[in-house]
Image 1: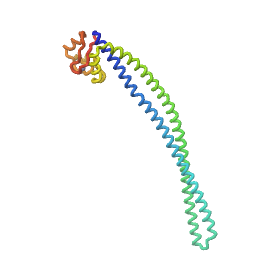
Image 2: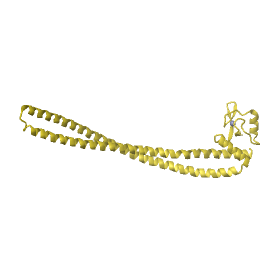
Image 3: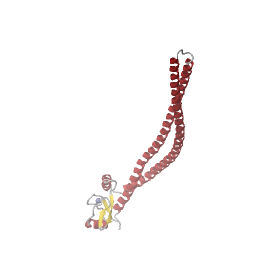
Image 4: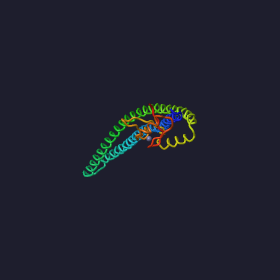
Length: 238
Ligand SMILES: [Zn+2]
């Protein structure tokens, strides 16, 4: 095979690896962010439940105060039963006392319901905190794994870039310029294999048929040939 063509094939292999690693390197920080966001969301969920519990406790205290007030009101009314002069007034105070009793019963029911809410919230908080703890531990492990992968990718990239540099030095300046232009303009693929697809011979880059004439030239591999459709350098592996 033509030495220049082989060098271009090697260069393309390195550039393909480098591009894949660079894409991974760009993608990994997003995964870390997603993990951190999930943990933050779980933490916020616990906070929301705790705030709800605080509100329920506050409401309970306020209802207990209402209950005390009603109790005082009732005692006052009961005291008045001995002060009233007429039957009519007496009946009115009895009605008042009955109303206060009903009010107290209502407040007691509300307090009971608030207590139940508190109990339920306490259970929910316990579960949410346990889930948060698990999420945090998993998140830390996952994040550490991603960071290790990121470091490995960096090391691998440094090695490949060094290797690429020395391979690129073997390519004449003009040819390297053509190669680079193709690489940028053709989605990271400047050198394409000729593939047999059914009875057709196609360029692996653009999937267009390679003419028999061009195929013969490429097979001969005494010099560089480009795809007539996309311009990529073509090579043939027997
Ligand atoms: Zn092509």
